[in-house]
Length: 194
Image (cartoon, rainbow, N blue to C red; front, side, top):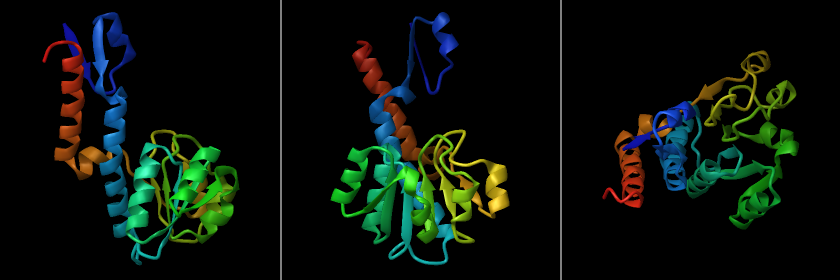
């Protein structure tokens, strides 16, 4: 008997021997980055009083979502700066004609940004970093908890963090469903059910 679910509790494995969490599949994570990026762009377009074309967009993190987002922002004509830790990610961003900066040295990037997108699921911005943002610059939080900054510090710094969790299901539910279906079918084929 197979049990398939999304973001399943590990304790379920004690009851069911054949448990599969389709959200752990790499192909689902990669495909989910597309509606996440598009949803983030929609939020930015709603929040900004300028076009993304010509805007200075800071993308914090260059994993699956960061890459999908940065490429789409670049295609829209934004001046993209990727902030990441890995030298390979910084090199890749540069090779794609984007600016890049080590995540430990992003105050200058933040100070010049028109819009900031966070994809890093950990606290990387302190109050001093937040204060370097110009007033009104949206900080769109795409990462899982705990997020990039402490909410109280952000409030003290006058920064409005826009939480944007679960964008695939919110901005493109049919596509999100198709992505999940594809992952489930792959599991069923691997298990000899289909």
